[in-house]
Image (cartoon, rainbow, N blue to C red; front, top):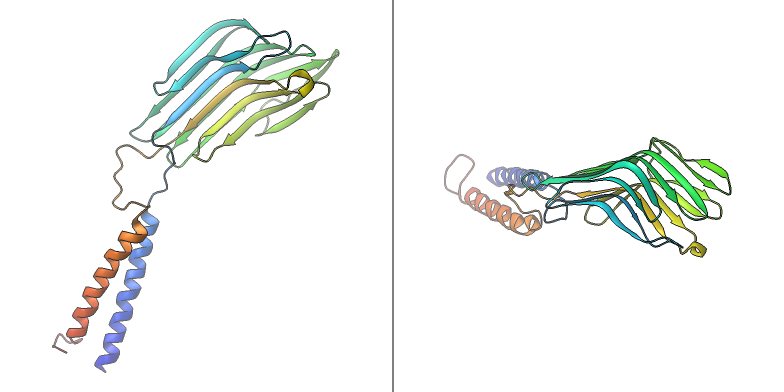
Length: 254
């Protein structure tokens, strides 16, 4: 009778330990891979085109240290505008968040074999320790080849691709995420054909990635919980089992 009582007690202890291990495992937070939050934003960028100079990210803001960068008007390379170009980034190591945005009201492009115009360009990106989200949208736009215009979709779904004969391709609301959980958003990404130098033009770039909060001190490190946590639970189980082995269910010595 005492043997069966001890067996039942042992089963209860093992069941309880499995529950505790499950709770510890579920409580371990999943954080982004970055050591600290980061962000990057710019309104225009292009590689060299035939007869046009390359344009480095303009205006350009990065976090850290972050802030707002603006430029009133632009006539450089393939880009022309009289509007204000704005790039902004920020972040908070305490909660592991970051953000980025890039915007311009109107923008003209001269690709040599084609001309394009865009309105209401805006890209945004927001990141937390558990992921990032964003969008790259235009209010309207068109590209004209040999006098024939092609309208570009406003507020297009992510990674909408448009093929432009004799020119290349355009991706609207382009979104990609790298292995560290950093999200990159381009409102418009134009890739020219190899015959046109295969150049790339980006309009409205916002990039962000979150990280583990600097103030967070997890009770159990997820990377070692399986090892040290298992040893600790095993030690507790051994102690409880030995006590129950040497003590009867009614408290008397075995």
